[in-house]
Length: 131
Image (cartoon, rainbow, N blue to C red):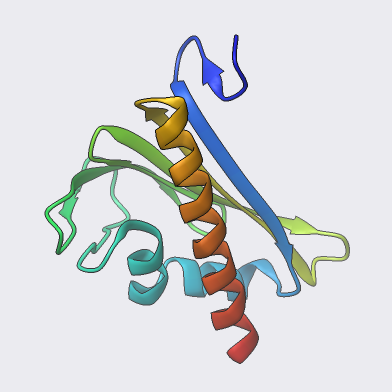
C-alpha cells in the first residue's frame, strides 16, 4: 500500500512540530478565532459541543466531531476529517502540535494538504512567538 493510504481512512497526512510554548498557551491560540481561521479557513466558528455545524466564509461546511480542551479538536471539513492535537513535551514548557487530515481524494491532494499544513504550522509558530 502506498505511503499515506490506509484501508479505513483513505489518503491521509499528518504534520507535527514541537513548539517552545506550554500546552495552555498553544491551546489558547489554536482554539481562538485566529487559530481556527488558520486551520479551517476564515469564518469558521467552532462550538465545543459534538455535532455542532460550522461553515467557512468560503462555503466549506463541517461539523464538530470531538472537542477536548487542551487536548484535541476533531471536525469534518468538507468531505475530509481534520484533527488538531496537543501534547506536553519535555518538562511541559514545550508542546507537540499535530495536524492530521484524512479521507483525502488522492496522493496529489495529500501532497497539497501536506504543503498547506506545513504553512499553517509556520503561521502558528510565528503567531505564538509574537505573543
